Structure formats: C-alpha cells, structure tokens
Length: 346
Ligand code: XUL
Ligand code: MN
Image (cartoon, rainbow, N blue to C red; front, side):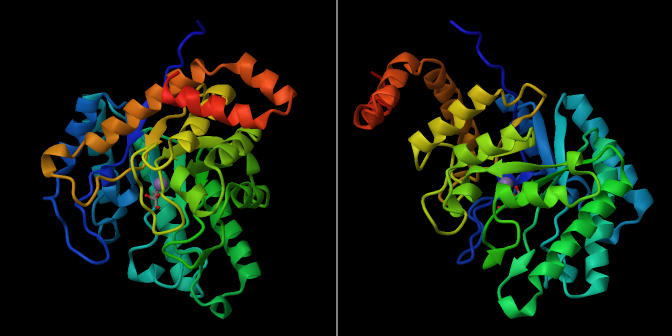
C-alpha cells in the first residue's frame, strides 16, 4: 500500500456562524473567540485562518501601535495552544469606504483606504507568523456595468497588488476568486483570471490563488479542474473545501454534502498533484446550517474532515488499472459506472 498522505486542517472563526441570513436573524448565540479556538483544538485542527478584524476587532478605530500590540497578544495565545495562523485576509466589504468597491472604487480616497487596510493586514500576518494574504475580492465588480470602467479596474487591481507586494518583500498574495455574490459580476471570477492578473503585477511569483469549491461551482466550473490548473502553475497555496448545490446563493455546505462525486474528484486531484507537500493546509470554509442546534456547533467541520479522509481512502483504492483499460477502449459507459460502484463501496 502506498504511504498515506498527511494532511493538516484549518478553519476560520467565521465558520462558527450564528445562522443569520438575509431574511432572518441569528438562530444560535455567538461563541467567544476563545470558545472558537477551543473548538478547533478539540477537533484537532492545526491552524486557524483570519480576517484582519478577526485578529484585531474594530481595526479601523485603532492606532497602528494598538493593532501591533493586539496582534502580538494573539500570536502568544495561538502559540500557547499550538495552533498556527494560516493566512490573514483584509475584510474589504464591510466599511462605508468600500460601498462602491474597494481597490476598484471610483473614489481615489476609498481606493487608498483599501490599500492602507491591506498593508495593515500584511503587518498583522507577519506578526502572526504567516506570509499568506488572502484576497477575496468581494466588491470588485459591478451591479451596474456602466458605473465602472472594466479596463481601468484591472489597472486599479494591479496597483493594489503592487502596493502590497512592495510593502513586504516576503508576503504572498493569494487571490480567492468568486464569480458573483455580493456583486452581480465580479472582475476576477475564476482561477484563470487570478493567475492572469498575477502576471501583470511587479512580482508574479508572489501572486497565487486559493480555490473554494463552492465558488468554482458558482462559476459553472468543476473545482477539480480548477485545482489541476492552478497546481500546474505551482500557484495553489490554499484551499476552501465545501459544497454548493447548483447556481444559487453561496451555500458553504459541508464538504461532499451536495455532490460526493465532485468532492471525490477534488480529493483525487489533490492526491495526484501532491497538494500539501509544501505545507499547504486543507481549510474548510463551511458553515453550520441555520437549523443547527448550538450543541452541534462543530459537527459541520468534523463531518467535512471525515468525508475528506474517507475520500482520500477512495482515491487511494481507486481501481486505476481497470479504469485505464476502460479509458483505452473508450468505454466511458462502464468507466462512469466503475466510479459510481467504487464510491458506493463495491
Ligand atoms: C466568501 C468567502 C470568504 C473568504 C475569506 O464567499 O469565501 O469567507 O474565504 O474572506
Ligand atoms: Mn472562502
């Protein structure tokens, strides 16, 4: 038997959400940060991912000295628990300055706010011991096409990447594409767009990507093809595994919950391409269902990991020889059934 791959797992504090949706309020009490960290420890996860204001709450109202002080205290707290910080992401979709976009806002002042906040994010990441900065470009796109100049917005995005790359020579920028929500159309909807814009930056080697399963599905793509593509460029630096039932709002379901075969193909691709061998984590960007009771607050994370590990076994025991013979004979009918039989346990 080949040696089992070793994976390290990660989740964010936002993955213990309270059940609010656009039509109704919270359905669970809010867990404290300490409670969330303890939950990850209990699960045996290795790392936590952060938004800048998960790490330093109310960041916009704090001085640089205060931000540094709080980031250092958090680092101590994480070290004490033996939990690593995987990445830090600037939350550029909440503040009044980002109503009309962040890096691509029509207002020069607001674009500057987004860049300044991203620089602070990089400082926090450095203190937390990670070089990975995740950019989910939430409001970089349009509701009203004619309100923006799409070409100029590419220039603005490159300016922002360049400012971040110049701020810290070691930081790596990891673009997390999503085709829509909150925007009607996002400017960086796929991994192809993320890797293409990386080439326009001052240091393309330090601009890579993060694939979220649900975001790829929302773009009408197969997440395993997106993974394979990014891995060919050596640019898949993080991963948000979850699931999504078709083209609707971003569901962040447990991994494999909507389509086990699509999940299997993601795991098989990760196994085949050696994801994780350079220290990358398996992060689950999953949320509890709105109906989840408070006492089940970690079940979606535990279950996602269970499914992931079961699918690693399925990838390891996949009948390659049989499959290859069917591929050579162009017998796709039986190949299709072979995959189903394998997943069903025969
Ligand atoms: C949004 C999303 C974010 C990013 C981090 O859909 O996935 O949680 O992963 O900002
Ligand atoms: Mn995500």
